[in-house]
Structure formats: structure tokens, C-alpha cells
Image (cartoon, rainbow over the protein chains, first blue to last red):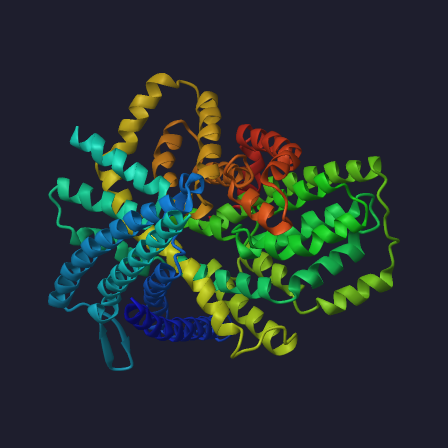
Length: 172
Length: 426
């Protein structure tokens, strides 16, 4: 368990660096584009598609960190009424469920990626350098993969929590 | 039978706190599977996240909002507002309303306002002899005030989901938002007169000192509002300029935040929220398309249309429905999930989609503070260390005022649409 959490923390460190860099680059590029457009009436052609695709990366890396920090948006009306122990039990189920759905979505994303790779779509060209769509879209299956890993770690965490509460009840 | 069981299981999973994207994701997958479409189509739709230019505004405004919340700007805004309006009877309450509205517009109503400004204003309100109950209610209700003003995130998200122009919605929200603010201010002033709370003397020197302190932040609302309303910037451009400007001002001019110590943390925290919102939006894009292809809203309308024949009755029921939704869901997921379903139905009843947007947001604003499970009630109870039941009773008069304003905004579409027509926004 500790081992898995350590891996998760290493990944989180990389994600944090990546998401900060992405955001900073986005702000600088977008600001530069505003200046170019409004003052010099020009603009860089590849900036807009690049910005749009960076949003996709932010989405998946952000969602992966949200999984680690248990900060996904949910409709949480019932679990406030539960005891700590039953809350852990419920959380084991919801995390395993979310891992399962992420797995199905990762498979779907993998199929999508293969199609895109076959189609060889170029989404943007920076000077002579052509960027194929699948290079950028690869974050979709990777993102879902990271979420599967994190949801399973969360499930294990709640399992240990549940056992701990069990023990507390037994000793009393 | 099988379908009913699946639906029941999903409702249970959702209400026990499964991530909303997983619920929507599994529904999309099942829907496409049953229509014998390959599952990769769900991802084709999700990929539309990268083809919606307006979405770029969301990380920028979220980041700027988080920066403002973590800096000392709440203090500076309150100081200026006090110097300007403290002389009015009940002036401090008006100050609270205005500062909260500005702040919520920039941070999106995610409870940040109550945490950041509530902690600042609540003790001052008590010190100046405002009754506890009045102050609690005021601060709790103000946490969702200001959603109607640019650059509020829920408005941007609504425009993306409803496929209407953000500029139009920003303009449409202005009169209803101001109207609500003014009514609440009048209530506070007459309360201040009745309770004869002390007022401060107006002193131009104080105004100048406070204004000098906040001088670098004063241009922000004008930049955003003027830029968008004046047609100078698109929403995305305004977002980029805001994020850049706030970052430079807070780090290099005010030096409230350290570039290498605070900024990475704020970036991560704000992008976690963005990721959590966008992943729901992404999985919902496929489902929405499927539902529209399968003509689900049309079928819903045929069922509803037989029961509800008048537009007025439809609007009443819509308001009740949205209040319940707002109580149970946060504004972002509610927008993503509910809006695609109600828009075609509302259109069939002749409700303008822009007007519908304003009705929707006003309802959800109220939903935040509706007992028993409105989210901001819990945040306020936690922040002010008061039992939740006390928060319930303190917000009741404000909820009543908001409901009255909601009714007016719902049944007088011109409150929302007049400016849009006047300015001929496209």
C-alpha cells in the first residue's frame, strides 16, 4: 500500500510540474496573441489550436490529481447521514465503480486513438514541424489510466479505514 | 426490468457520492452500446473539448479567481468599499453585499467568497453592533451573489453547453443581477436604520488612501466588463489578459504571493477544479448528443406538454425543479447535466434561451442557500462555527427576497432581454 502511494506521489509531483508549466505557457501565449492581434493586427496561426488542445491536457491532468485528492465533483446527499464505518464501505464501492468506468473509457479512448493514428490528421504546424492529432490525444487514454490507478488506491485506502473502525468497535 | 434495476443502481451510486463523470460516462457507454455505435464515439465527442474556443477562458478565469482569493485583495476591496459606502445607514452591510458580488463574479460561486470575505467581514459586522442573525444570513447569502456579472464561470459554462453567445448572456445578466443587489441593499439599509447601527463619517481622505491601496486592482472589473461589453475583447482574450494581469500585479507589484512558493500550489489547486469540471463536461458531450439524436427532449416534451399547457405553469414548475436541482448539485454539474435537457423543452414553450439562462442561474444561486442541503449553508456553518440550524433560520429572510426577485425575473423576460436588444449584441 505504501509502495503504491509512493508511486502515486511521484506521479503527482510530475503532474503538478506539468500542469503548472502548461498553464503558464498558455497564459503567456494567449496574452502575446492578444497583444499581436489588437496592437499589431496580426497573430500566430498555430497558437489558437495549440491553446485549445492544452485545455484537453489540463482537463485530464487536473482530473487525475482530483482523483488523488478525492476532489471529484459528486452529488453527495446520502453519505452525510452515514456513520464513519458505513461511509468507508460506501466509498470502497464508489471508487471501484469509478475505476471500472475509467477502464471502459480508457478502452474507448484507445480505439479512438488508433483510428486517429490511421487517419494521420495533422492539427497544427509550427514552422515546418507537423503535429499529428494522436500525439496530443494520447493524453485521453493516459489520463483515464492514471485515474484507474488512483481510484483503486482510494478503494484500498477506504478498505483499511473500514478495518480500522471495525477494530475500534471490537476493542470497545 | 433490467433497465429499471440499472437506473436504480446508478441513482444510488450517484447519491452515495460516486464521481459524477463516472455516472455520466457509464450512461453514455451504455447508450451508445445499445444503439450499436462503437464506444470510441464517446471519445470522439469528448474530444470536442479541444474544439471549443470559449473553454480556454475557464482555466484562465479560475486561476485569476484563486489568485485573488489567496492574496490580500479581499482586504483592499473591503477597505475601499467601506470608505465609499460606510456613511450610509446600514452601510457596512451594503459594503458586504458589493464586495461579495465583485468577488464572486471573479471566483465563481464555489464557496470561496464565504471563506475569504466572510472571515473578514463577519467579525467587523458584529463589532459594529449588527445582530448576529442578520450578519450570518447576510454573509451566507452573499456567497452566491454576483454570479450574474462577468466574468462569472457559471455563465461561461452555460453559454458553452447551451451553444449561445457568452456576450449576450453577460449583457442579459446585468439588470437582473443589479436588481437583486439593489433590493438586498435596500433591505439592509432599512434594517440598519431600524437597528440604529453606528455609521462612519464620509471622509474623502480615507477614500483616497483606500483607493491608492487598491489602485492596481481597480482596473480589473473595467478591463473585463468594459472589454467584453465594449466589444474590445472576446471572452477568451479578456480571460487571458485578466490571468496575466492578476499574476503580475499580485506577485510583482503587491508581492502578496511568492512566484516559486505560492503560485505552483495555487495553479495546481485551481486546475484540479478545472479538471473536475471539464471531465464531466467531456463525458456529458457524448450523452447529450445521443439524447438529442434519440429525440429524448422531444419525447419529454410530448409527455410534459399534455400535462402542462401554459407557459406560465411550465415556468413555475421549472423554477421548483431548478431549486431542487440547485440544492443537490453544484452549479457546474447542474449546468452540464440539466441544461441540454431543458433547453429544447423551454424553446417549445417559447422561452428565449438567453432568458432561460438567467432564470437557470438565479435558481441555482438560491439553491446554494436552500435548506436543508444547500452547499453554502454547510460552508458558512463551518466557517463561522455556528450550528447549521442557526444558519438555516438566518438565511430565511434573504431567501424570501431572492424568491421574489426570481419570480419577477422569470415572468418579466424584458428585465433580461432589454439590454441585449438595446445593444444589439450578436
